[in-house]
Image 1 (cartoon, one colour):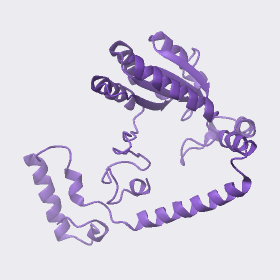
Image 2 (spheres, one colour):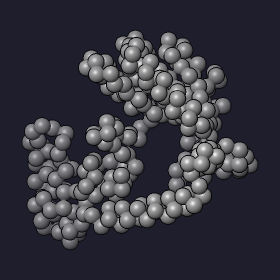
Image 3 (spheres, helix red, strand yellow):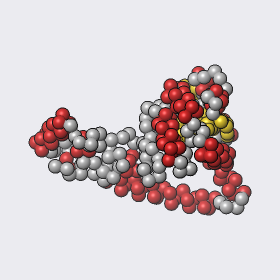
Image 4 (cartoon, helix red, strand yellow):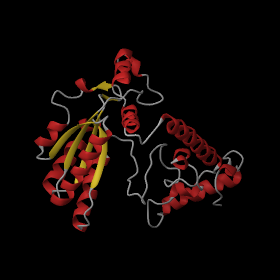
Length: 274
């Protein structure tokens, strides 16, 4: 994950993706995509393939209530319902699509009502309750694979933090609203208190875990930061089975420029491909 964020030579995306756009073929995780809702119809296609393979698996797709305002969401739900695909649509309704409150996004009863409209089995859960989310997802998977049908889960939650590091949420919502939610409903705190009451976790273990995890993260950070960038040739690969003439000509032009001005293009920052 750290290699991907630094776009170094070990990145599975070979440096051709934005940071925090993880994916893993080994873990069956499709790469995260920036454009809203593009992954929803893709998940339906994947689920249709799983249905044809009849291997007892299903696809699950995560998105926010803002993405549910995109046309891709409606197209995906309709295709999943009519094609009877084993796919779970997991909508995290946190109240804000970047800077637009849900009250300005829709006038209906959240996202759950849309599932019913498409003839899809739907459930709304407390998204801040890990056990409710686990139980709902487990039941949704069982139904999806046994009946070859989609399921929509709407998890109700709240985004306490800013949308991104460049976002100032105080510009579109009152600070008191955030403070109230912070005090009232913290999913991590809820889980920790539950585990402490069950005598399976303690403040001492919490402190040790935080210390250990911070060390591991910083070690991974330092190692990924030192890695070189992917080979420059990766800018021209993986789109075509055989590189077409115009792309090959561009690659040769880049090679010539790099050979002529190596210091300007900082060739030592990249893995060698020349």
